[in-house]
Image 1: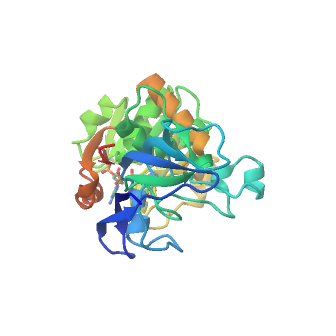
Image 2: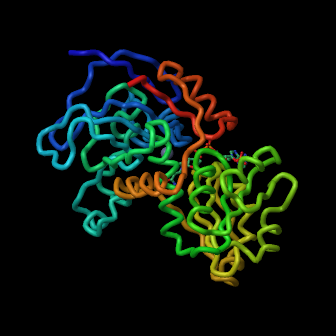
Length: 340
Ligand SMILES: NC(=O)c1ccc[n+]([C@@H]2O[C@H](COP(=O)([O-])OP(=O)(O)OC[C@H]3O[C@@H](n4cnc5c(N)ncnc54)[C@H](OP(=O)(O)O)[C@@H]3O)[C@@H](O)[C@H]2O)c1
Ligand SMILES: [Zn+2]
């Protein structure tokens, strides 16, 4: 059996380990992907720190995968060797629960599969993925560009397009990290009046380059007051990891405004009931998207010039790359490449 390189987490809170493994074979309904690039999402912390229930270790993290099909298992239709594909957080579903029967695969509660969590993900040279999890990568997007679109991209794109906000509405993106920097681009390209909110002045020029019409520095300005001065936000896309930062923008929601929670906040939100009642305001969450949502994200990005800003590291420097993401200094998505 041919060996390959993989980066695994041996046990919860353990270090990332570069190991040699047998190259896996696809089973029925699965394909093997030669992984070319994998984005490092903040949600990889669930695997690294053991924060997701039931993870079996050792586990290979990574759910922002771009590569090429290398082998096809039995019973797979519509996919062939050399097809360029991506896999995101949505790695498969039961197919028979009420959500799945409605075609809402992302809220499957019976057997949701997640690469890097329930099966080995993209921090390796070859991975196995269920065919239902595949999204086609269009020409014009490189693997390094496509990888981050498979989670950071689809999460922001899909939440924005399903939010009910319409072109010209005031849409704020809170936090400019992996998710936020794509959220700003999508919001601007979808025609929203796009406001970027982040800590400090230093992200302002980049936020404007990404398409933000205005920038609010949450360290020197009160974001809720600033949004209210602009008429109140129809939607705030909260991509930060901080509950306090989300609380600080709630007061900037306009009438019928909605805070969409994307970031796994470190503490519960504090939402005044009167704020919700008096302006029919709402707080909602949004999980990434299914494989066809990812494919839509890739197609929209290729057509409209949305691209992640990336810092690329080879697979063997995964520890350094992961630490770079955690430091908050990356501009804006760290991506691992395998050389394939
Ligand atoms: N809903 C979903 O389906 C989904 C999908 C993917 C990821 N996520 C979650 O989304 C969050 C962001 O992921 P990411 O990959 O974009 O992470 P990231 O690149 O590490 O960015 C983290 C963001 O959090 C902000 N932040 C960190 N500490 C903060 C603090 N103390 N106060 C205010 N802001 C703070 C940063 O804000 P500044 O820009 O101000 O520095 C930055 O924008 C994570 O919680 C991740 O687990 C959710
Ligand atoms: Zn993710």
